[in-house]
Length: 129
Image (cartoon, rainbow, N blue to C red; front, side, top):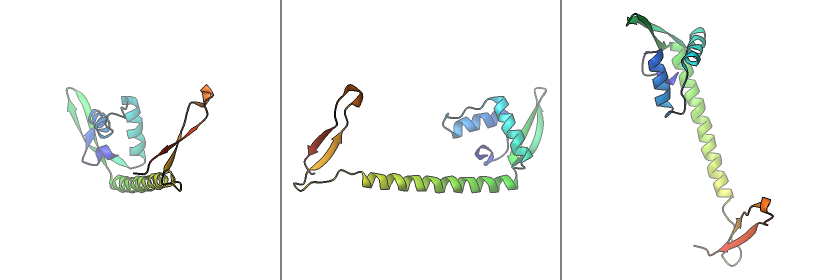
């Protein structure tokens, strides 16, 4: 849906836009794209904007419907909230896993050896900075 947020696109342009928006992480096949397009059109999230014939081939352009813009905005807000929760949890985990200081002001750090090699964990000490 994000690929159509800026305006109408035809199928091949949608494939390119999805790849660009995802930094190349998502590369849809044509059959997959049109399955998604059909489902989104059926759900009234996207609609046909216009059609044209280029080199004797029909090119159909799709756009977000009014409902589709609302669905996209809701999904973007949901994902932003989830990302905020994840960032908060990572920050809390980072704070709670800081090495503790002992009475002499040294920090203890657990150095993990390879347990498959039969090595026991080693407790290393580093001076306070």
